[in-house]
Amino acid sequence: WVYALMQEPLPHSPTPPLPHSRLKDAIAKAIHLAQHFVHPDGSYGGEYTSRNTYNFFPYGFELVGQWLPEALAINDRFLKGLATQKEACYADDHIIGHHTWNYLLAWRDFVGARPPLRPRTAERIWLPHARILIDRRDNTELYLALNKGGVFKLFEGDRLLHSDTQFSLQIKSGNKLKNAVGHLVGPYEIQVERDRILIQGNLGWAKQKQMTPLNLLILRAVMFTVGRFFPNLIRSLLQQVLITGKKPAPFRFVRQFQWQTDDHHAGQGYWQLTDELHAQSWQKVEAAGIGCDQTSIYVVMSRTFQSGQLQPWLDLTAQVKQLPDGEILRVERSLNGRDA
Image (tube, rainbow, N blue to C red; front, side):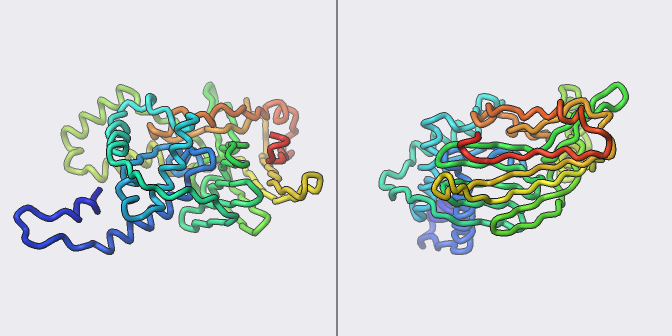
């Protein structure tokens, strides 16, 4: 939109607008990055991203698609997901207007002449600063967040096989329960090889703070008085309390992905996942499991419904209750369509 605006002549200006090549290059780079995160089923983003959201705004891709055809392919893949209800339920968002106008404008400015979608090729995309890995091979696509303890989505063809948000424990603390989770952003130890990926580190304590009506009233009062003079400081403090940061819990995990070849199915490969959880004592663990959609930060749009969240919870409580102190909890899974 900004680029399109800059292409328009200024009022009463005798000269046409000049192209802004730096802005155009920056937009093109953003498009090339965004296209990697439209999944084979047409969904976009999810729990492996830093804010856990499925937000998608198509209008900008239609505008950019007028001069960069790759942008139209992003919308076309997403449209396939809309046809099968793979989008997030925006009715869960109380500020739905952000989505409404964007989709209406995308419809109004829809580009008629569109290139055909090209099939994706086998490749590995490694984003070192984000610590996100995308691995495409043998009809599978793995979206893996190494900065979030190995949270991942795995697709076979256009079907979601597994969505996984790492270990989650309920720990008894006095008269209350605390939640130790493996999906918080942190500086985990990682090893990335062609057929083996290893992530290890400590679980973290899930954030308990919520923006209740009382807390929202207090925030409004602060912003109406002194807060309006220090908006960036207030925003930074809120992010630290509600979203960012991690306090380590006394549980250490090791997650390993190993690529295997299945000789019984024409050499079709699959990922073998081994999870280990180490603890000096299991006595205070009330419940344990691995979920498909767990989020432990206060981001409104990370709590919208999406159909992938209907995958079953892997309940590990019974196994944990049988473990003596110091023993390792070990979970092995073959991540293929035959065992899913």
